[in-house]
Amino acid sequence: MTISEHPSSTPFAVPALTGIASLAGRYDALVCDLWGVVHDGIAPHESAVDALIRFRAGGGRVVLLSNAPRPRGSVAAQLARIGVDRGAWDAIVSSGDLTRAELAVRPGAQVHHIGPDRDLAIFEGLDVALVRLEEAQALVCSGLDDDEAEGPEDYRDRLEAALARKLPMLCANPDRRVMRGDRVVYCAGAIAELYERMGGEVAWLGKPYPKAYAMVEEVLAELPGGTVPRARLLAIGDGLHTDIAGARDAGIDAVLVTGGLHAEEFGGAETPDAARVARACADIGARPLGFLARLAW
Image (cartoon, rainbow, N blue to C red; front, top):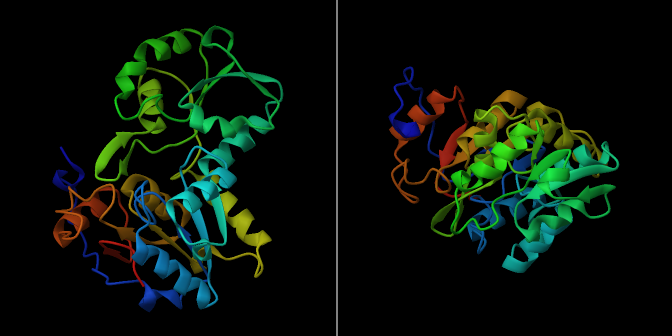
């Protein structure tokens, strides 16, 4: 059963938008998702980059809130590599930053890493030791070793061994899936979800969980202009269960981008069906201000 087929309560209307210009004056800062909104993992979405630049030109601030399992510096380097204009954002908050904060209060911890080597920056400069599973005090899951070929079930044996030792897991990317170009690939959240179903303890570090939005507030407070009340924040994202549900729980208004993760279920990347969007939002008890296929001004 897909999100749009779920027999939910009667859906409410979610307006179709052509851009965010008509909303911009009501908000002092955008809390914008990255993957699926600003880029597809390979190239930028130019209309999204343009919208963020225009919002900033009008005096607004933009915090990119990403479930990427890497520190903000690594995320910024990736954005530069794929050609995202640096003028599109003021600051970045990532799941990698949240994970580093959790590890920083566990000095000397011995952790076993599940994920690709490209995520090892998450441990740089921290007082932790990367060890074999048999020696570990905790797991840190940042993703799959090979997300082009593997799924969460490929990790069941390793998770059973961890469960036998009652190891807690830090999930450094709560996303279950993400679009890479036109393909869906699994993320760390899919492994963490399996571990939790098996009876394991998981600390979820990123959207839709409260610590992510608390860190956004901390970062905004350090920028010129200072603290922004949540009533003056607008979240933009393509993930119903991360971006939109997270904004709902944080008391932040939201706009749904339908051409990303859920594009197929909404009727196509460029042709979202308003009724499907409304049902999906009703399913999670969220009422975004509107939806648009791609972020645009």
